[in-house]
Each structure stands twice: as structure tokens, then as C-alpha cells.
Length: 393
Image (tube, rainbow, N blue to C red; front, side, top):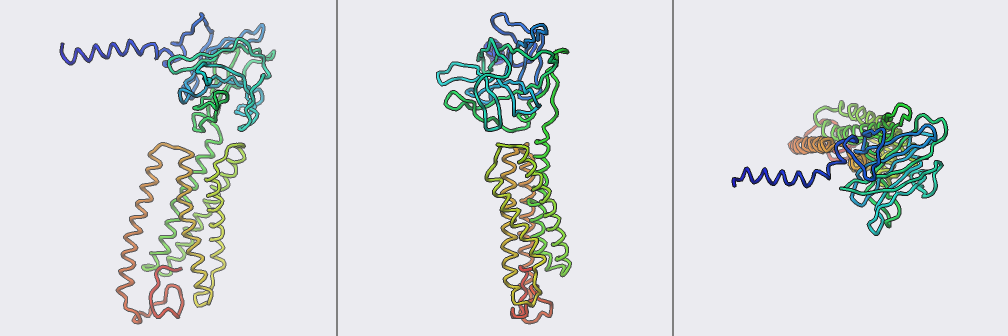
């Protein structure tokens, strides 16, 4: 038997083995359940590869459903719920399925009072016939829910998680775009699922990230390079370009700071402690640096030396904190890898330019013999023995 025929037989054998495992993964129309469970409607939910099968009895106001999802990890959990008051997570009356410590799967009811308060217990709706099953990596929640009379549509929330604490309590889920946007409406009369609007927090997170990358991650380092190197070639133009660049960086940074505060107010219970602390330190030092412009003594003032130390120290502190916090923010946002790579390439280019300019600047300075140049000293101090000092402002 040839190699080609052997490979074909092996592939066909693997397909026959794996075919049952794919029965849940195509679309809701291909999914079948045991115990002859049949539902009038089914919808492929738009996020997290989840599905809902359901029918609604308008005579007794009962919603019968089967929610199908794959947990983030095999020992994770899945959840489907109704929010009676809003479209968000807080306030949701949820059905959550997970594996217990003994390996059996169970479905329980939870009330999501806040991002940090998930309380097991009875819901505002009466839930019956609730059970859960696990098959081929996917979990299913079955339940019947008695809805209020006259309800024609409901706010549905669904979610998946990766861990169960002590086998009894669902752990926190991811906060990626898929997780944040896993919500919508279920039209009980039309038999369809209506996608919810994109989460405004996600939009604000992206705006916050872009503003801070541009300000502290790009413009501020460029401003430092202008002050350190351009003065050798364009004095005093470098000073005005430097000030314009850093004020632009600070202004954009203020906008980024404001969006960060808004995000904090929108996300009660969600904390990124190190990113926040770095941000506070960064913004405080940057604000202090702005005051340096107004506190700048004249070049021949006796305190100019100390001002230079303060200005340089704070400036480099902002530079380091800014770049570190940009990377911390990227870890939180988790954008496509190309964006992080693009920023790394941008930093590498700036670093390469800085190395070249450092070498050129020192070459020019060292070629100028002490005592023979009548040019103004860069720091304006007459007591520096006629040496050019290209590294102060």
C-alpha cells in the first residue's frame, strides 16, 4: 500500500473519530440534545462561540432554554443570564455551570450584584428543570424560567471563564472585547437574538491607550531627544521646538488621564493596581515638569545648576515611567501582537537615532578646543571654563 493511500485511510479514520466532537461546533442548527429535547428557536450568539436554543410559551410565560458554550479552560465555567434592569453585567440573574471538585458538572443560580459580589441563591425569576452536561469540551445549561407577564424581550448576558475556586465558585473571567460585548436582547415574540451595542468601555480603553502611547510613549521621548541633541545644530530654535513638543505631549497625556478616570468610574470593582500607580506617579512628575518652565531661572542665576538637576531628573523619570506604563497598558488591552510589535519597532528606531546623534554630538563637542570658542555656553553659566555643555537645558 502506497504512502498516499495510507495517509487517506488515516485521515478518514481520524475524521470518523472526531466527527461526534464537532457536533456542537458548527452552528446551533447542527446541535442535538439527549432526552429528545427540542426547541423552536436557536441563535448563534455573536461572541465567545456560544449558542442558545429556546422556546417561549406565551400562555404560562415560560422560557425553556439550552445554552451551549465552551469554557475558557476545561475546568472553567459557562454562564447565561437575564438582566431585568439594564444591558450590562451588574444586576444579572445568572445560571452558571461548572465542574465540581469531584469532576461532576452542576448548574447553579447566582445574582451578580457587582463586579466583586456574585452571590449564590434564588433569582427574581423562578427557575425549574435546571441541569448541566459536559460533552466533548462543551458545556450545556438546560433550564425553564418563569418570566413576568407581558414581557416581550429580555436583556441576555452570557460569559465563559477559566477557573472555579475550590470547585464551588466561578473565578473572574477575562476582560477582552469578546467578553465585554457578550450581551444582547432576546426577542420573545420574533424568536430572534438581537446583538447589543459595542461596550463603551472598550472604546474608551482604546482611546485611553492611543492617547497615552502617543503622549508618554512617543512624543515625550522625542522632546527629550530634541533638547539633548538639536541644540548642537540649531540654537536657540531647539528650545522652542522642545517646549512645543513637551507641552503637546502633556496636553495629550491629560486627555489620556481623563479617559483613564472615566474608565475607573465605569468599571467599579475592576482594578489594575500597578498600571494605576504608575499612571499616578507619571502624571504627578509630568505636572511637576510643566512647572519647571515657569520656575526656570536665568542662565546666570546661582540656582540654575540646581534647576538643571531637577529638570533633567524629573524628565528622565517621566520618560522611564511612561514607557513602562505603556507596556503595562498593552498587557491589559491585549491588542493584536502587531500593535505591540509596532511600538517596539518605533522605540527601537528612536533609540537608534539617539545613539547616532549621541555620537555625532560628542564628536562635535570634543572637536571644539576649550577656550577658543566665543559661542554662548549652552547652560549660560560663565563659570564653566569655556567648555560647551551639550547635555543641559
